[in-house]
Image (cartoon, rainbow, N blue to C red):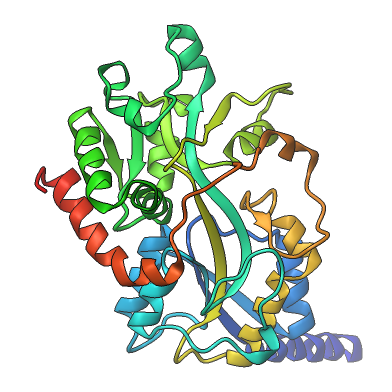
Length: 338
């Protein structure tokens, strides 16, 4: 009977501890991943439960954060990048960056804490082009030619961060008027637009059963294809096509949500995302480069060639002009106007 009573006491104590554990709500895009053992260790060390709320593409995620501004659904947001930070700041959904989380590392993101970075660029299906003996396009303008009709898949910049990034790089390289004239020619040449990256990559891209052998994705995507392949590969089945005007350097970050309930715990979680263990983890979970120095990359990153150049507007310019540019893109590409 005494042993039975002790077991009951232990169970009640555990139940009480679980009930008292703080819940940290983390809003993220659908690609956010931290390995379960690392997340469990954070929870154990801080006596907390982390609830990850995935909200689609980063653009969709930010829209949801803005729509719930009056009654925040999260304490921390991950996935705000340099194409979206201005919109987030204008909407007033982010709390100021705490002094304890001062910026540092290889990439900065004013208004949030940088966690990782990567390059949005075109990917191509090597087998598709080889089988048809079609030369790869050498410029973005080539994509408007008859030979490349109905071959390109992109994401809508109004709902997708890589879609927005790619559009911004075209504007930065060509200038506004020439860029949108180019987008009009792409539309006329059979451009396929999807809501977000997952749809365009896993549904539209020919590598995954779709009909489009060119897709807006990431410079690390070929490495990920090798990493996840069930067969041992000596080469990646996809490649990068870093054309002038088609490369954007994306910096992702995390921030406390204005009005969130767990600010102190949220600060610890953001610091956790910059720890060496998590920084190494993101290289083969989210396929981004770590912002912190001296973090070893997996050997598979030899297939993730970093572009030699990129066309990335300043975040202030993006904040001031992106809404206007997205509206114009919508008129040109989706409505067939100017």
